[in-house]
Amino acid sequence: MSGKMMKNEGLGLFKAKKKNSRKWLEGYYVRILETAGHGSPAFCHYIIFQKANGLGRMCRAEVDHGTLCRCTGIRDKNRRLIFEHDIVRRKIWDEDVIGKVVWSDIGLTGFFLEVMDKNKKGVSHSYPISRGEFDDDERNINTDEVTGNVFDCPIC
Image (tube, rainbow, N blue to C red; front, side, top):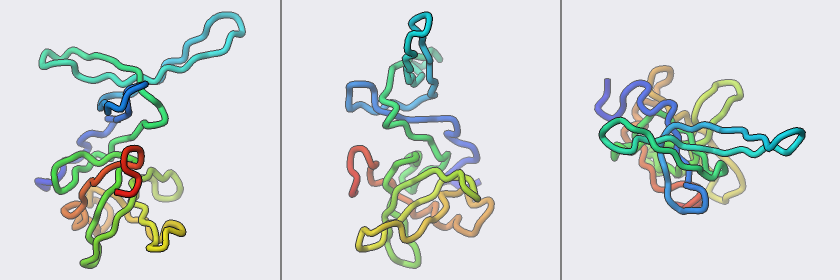
């Protein structure tokens, strides 16, 4: 096992901004559907549960579901967990490229780094965000660096 990652580390973990706040929360996500009665409209509450203290207790907070990000289970070169919607810098063939982390459920399922072409006219390449188990891109794990996310800094 590499010093840069551990298998399944962070899987099931999410982050999102606290509702009506700019604060990011990391934890485990649930959606609670609430009905007001006979035929009344339903309300959804999006909740992140996180450890409150060293005693193992959990606290919960409602989050803005539009900022919900799944954890890839991979850490960057600075040991930060990489999440969906993060902006990542990667060195490919001695060139720095910057892209955003996306989830794809078409064909090969998993997380990818979508890199825009230099004229910003669309995605030019997609590279797997991988654990190095199924492809030869394990070398990229050592150069990946989270520089921001699409919500706080879309052009990091």
